Image (cartoon, rainbow, N blue to C red; front, top):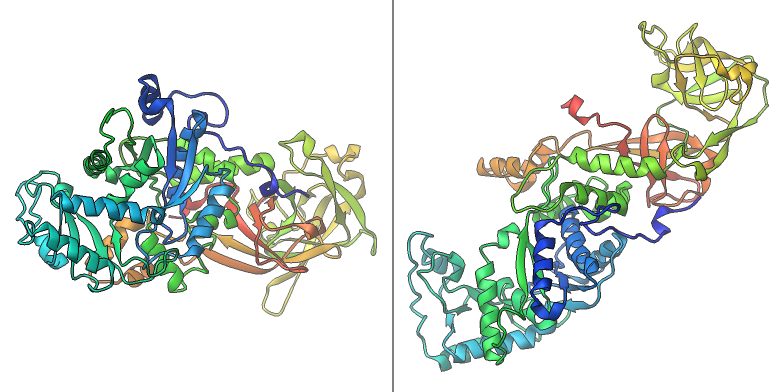
Length: 590
């Protein structure tokens, strides 16, 4: 039994779909145009720049596939850079988890960088801006600064500190970093244009005080650069040619370019300004119905115990999908299907489920598992006799082979496969009706036994020995086929039936609506949660073939769905997570 996750993952670029070459999307077309025009010396270098303040979610997977895919498609390099400019929310646990997720998706970065690697260079850049009259220390509160910003159609009001002497700003900036200035007391602002229609140009804050020790630099720094100031410069320091961002950064792009221009001027590298610089291009975020992707909200779920952790199989994190049983190739297929555009759209989660079904249908071993058991006794089968039946591992793969499954007088079947008083078109087990036991015999139901509460505890049947699978009599047609496992030769297991965490199609908008009504995030989330997102079946039975199954092994439980072995499994106690049902039944229940 092999673990698919141990095999080398060779992810497709988002432009190949894993198979045949497709037409270029708009980002790929821009990259090829830059190469044709000789920009950046014919190089392609990208970066994936996550902030280590949480675990990556499925939205990040789209960016990962693009950043690494663009570089791979053109013989370039994609680096991993952690945007660690806010020590209050960042730690090494997140750093390690991010690296694990990227590698699980099948990618390896060229170099590993941190924004904190450039703190000294960024500080020196800020000092030079102050000296040149392009930055100043502002002592106003954040509320006062925001009130003076104006609107897109109304100019802002200049800060009373905007024209303070350079020497004074330099002195205060050093005090900010020496720990002499408390948080929120002072900021460093770039002096640009308080009347610019782009609000980001209205003297943006580029440094603030944070007293929390940094997970890499400790207490060396107290003044930390803002994202807009650090991001473009970090791209430039590293030689990034194409900075790929989501659509909310469109309005930030002019500021991104301006800071790089200022940096190049200060460093005396103004020649070939347009030929040798990072180019920011924006694409749409990944949005899915019945999914909430905000790290802030996901942190509430984890901290309040509404889920078991960041890797809870109901979470939209990459590690959550991995534990649920999703494969790297299924995520690549899904992202390839939705593509990259310049407008946001809400994608149907069913499309992602179809991608994993398609993948597991081709790769998962078929096994018998009974998740809601009732005993079937074949009264005319010899007591103590055990036969070995042949079970095909995967009918979609002729090379997958087969395995043996034990058959005996007493079997476990699904309670749903027996009905004492059945309707006319019920073709499973009911008194007087024949069904085929998959890979075994045709049996005729003869009755049942009930307990004092009227619950069926045993079902009885007789088998036809001439109808064993593979014998001529097996060709006799019956309308129903059901699965089973041997009572004597089976394993007891726990099965966790997962479904969507939210019962509303657009939880982001519903959360905002409930918060506007005065509810807290926690209260709103509890109201939106699907009460049936997890059903634990503690006593289920699976065939003994699964005794050596390891976490992340994938199986199709025949007639039920696709399942993977959970990390909670121990020797002698298997735990399975349902990855996805065989068919999309969610829409029918809503």
